[in-house]
Image (cartoon, rainbow, N blue to C red):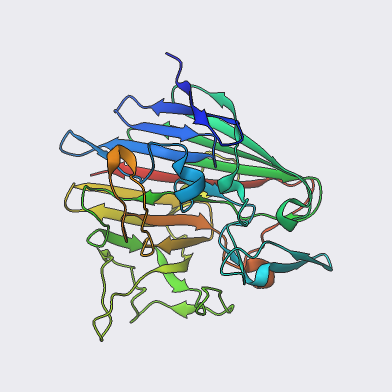
Length: 349
């Protein structure tokens, strides 16, 4: 059976195809060319049933208009660059200011999450998509060739492999941006979250880090032991999360990519469904966004409505604004080098 189908066409007539991946355990993923989006993911529950675990839309036309990077690959630079400015090899560059006209977010309004990719290979359990970002695209130097490979492996693991090459020095920070929810509740606030992180990067009101590190002990950012995401301040206001955590990388195993190691970054659990999700990644940091600003005006998958905190984004990546923070891990990619990232979302009881 051919797992590739035409999902629809964009307003300019560009056809968008989709591939359905299936595993022997009953997991099923749907990946489309628009934004290299994971449009749907259903996995087995411990009780023998099945559970949809991501947010998405049935209608392709809703993605360009209403999707907050839902299920997409963000780039060329995921997360934020302060004032959209960075210097590379002594030259200044300006990225789009699409966050309140002040900062660059996820590569701008025409970032990788909002472009058509091309399916270049697929079979029953994996699909590879590719994108070429030309020199000067959104202000970034160098022609960047990008690949994204989704695979269903084992009983119920989604592996995402990202790679890129360039013909001139540039910066690259890619991130997968699904919103996860492990049960049928309207929000994820009662999910338990564990993060293997002792440190966060404090941010200002625009969510731009100042380059410092804060320890999580004694703060609302302490997820070193599993606890509900829901938390309130002393005045009763709910604490919301859209913050970067520095991963300890203290629990590691070899990656499928030679020379890389996966490290346990996070575990998300739902007592309601009995389902858990472990995130393992090669990346040094994790952006955690609880979806507090979600208010989607159109129906999602199977007509469901998505409101505040309908899903949580766990985004393996580099530190926000790291091109302007030279003491943080570098995001510079040069000719002859290969950018590689591997992340696995492992579902079970």
